[in-house]
Amino acid sequence: MTLVETLDEDLRFPAAISERVGLELVRRLQETPSHVEVIRTRLSQECPATAKEEIALLERVTSLSSPPSRQPCAPLSLTQPRQIVVEYDQEKGRVELTGDGIDAEFVAALEAWLTQPD
Picture 1: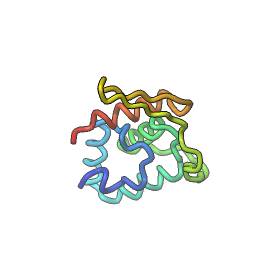
Picture 2: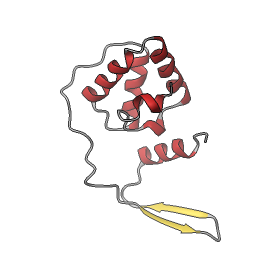
Picture 3: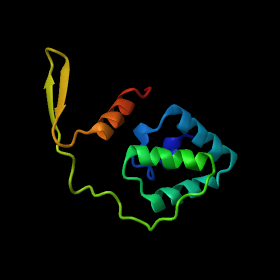
Picture 4: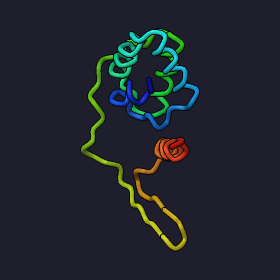
């Protein structure tokens, strides 16, 4: 069982999950497969809007603490993509990302994705 196979459709920021949190989630899911539905329910109820919020939620779930009570929220809007310009200089081996869509959360998610093992 892998985290991606099990929760990929439910996670909004999977690339930002640390190895420690990911391994703990997998361990919990292997011990008690019913935790999959608990995690899915909490993700849909709490609707984390940032990678930091999603990771905090996952850490709470792995520690089995109770979630805060919230109303269900709408899915993230995909109608307004981040405004990012990508420039690539093959000779210099350089990629530059600029634009309003670049913020600390984006950079953290990008760094997490870039450092994932193959």
